[in-house]
Amino acid sequence: MATHTFADKARRLERVRQALKRRFGEQAKPTVTHPTEYAIRIILCEEATPEQAEKALERLRKGFVDWNDLRVSRLREIRDVLGPDFPRASYKARVIPRLLDQVFKDHNSMVWDFLETMGKVEARAYFEKLEDVRPFVAATMARDCAEAHTFPVDNDISRTLGRVGVVQPGKETEAALQAFLERAVKSTRALEVHQLLKRLAQEFCGAEDRLCIRCVLRNMCPSVDLTRRPSKTAKAGKGKGVKVQGSGRTKEKSGRRGAARKAAARPPAKKAAKRRKA
Image (cartoon, rainbow, N blue to C red):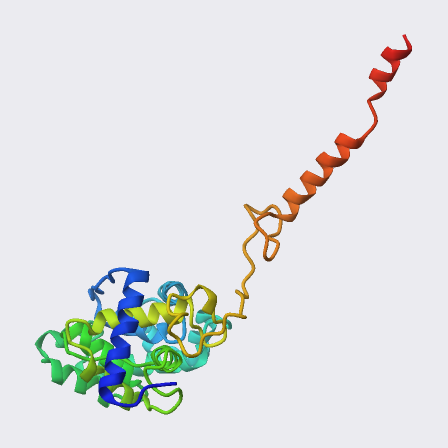
């Protein structure tokens, strides 16, 4: 059952942080060299793994001349480049050019060097006022580009905190959860906690695919389900053999062993029989 008081929630969150840090180790601080591209990456990362987002970003780089070309492109063109299987492709194909266009009209630039002169509060307020830009995008940009103390909240963060019992599942709005986290987590640890929770969501606590049996939080999570098994079958070894669920061997190896046993049970070869007759 989820805790209710602020102090209880904060203590449970700290226990979660410690357990995840032991599992995942130190987290690298992101380096923002191109704010425009970074904002695109943030949008792509929602409900997608870092690998999926990076591949999608690379497809956008190859599919358009530059980010200004992406800004003026049609939704269908962007969606086709992202691919039909990319998470929330239509939504992101609409939001990305919308974001780029609003900033371009405000500052007549695709470089976004205006962020260098903005303070922490001003940078966050600027992105929050943009239409169609989710609060977690504004919070992430303010945190990583202006060093503001923010805690971006998306579906991954909401889902994992609800499942591990820090908050009541489905009872907290993203705004309320963000306000709680910015108060409960020290500014020096906010980035770390955020990254650890994202790793938890991506590797063990997916929206559909949950790997509770492998999760480091399985002994303290009220939502744990140890009856679940990985839904993804292991890749065939170098293109040969198919992994057998629940077994440490492949069908190919099993077949070889069976063939060896049959060979051992065969009668002596014909040559040996001829020698006996002679």
